[in-house]
Image 1: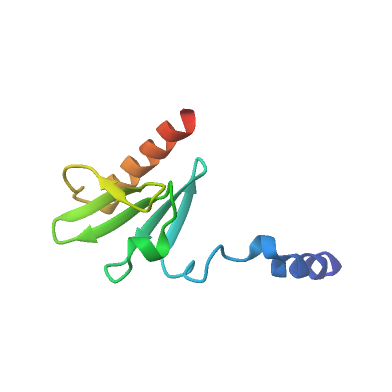
Image 2 (image 1 turned 45 degrees about the horizontal axis):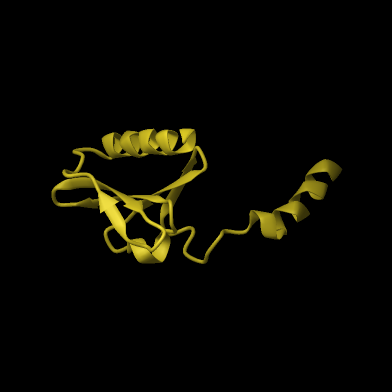
Length: 101
């Protein structure tokens, strides 16, 4: 019991706080030091993403993978992926490639 009580105050420190106020609205995955952010249709890339993030965004055509540049611009593949899992695997592969440089 004392160990648990000693741990819980640590959760209130700055190290455990979300990096920005909208952290819980989008789904974030950290893969090889790259954030992969899954956005809802109402979410914007400018609000939820930072430079070097990868954003996954769904529209009528499928799942798009957006690569966020230092200036906030995004670049995508030529075509969307049919499923979320395909887009996520492509984003993870890009993150692994980026971490190997």
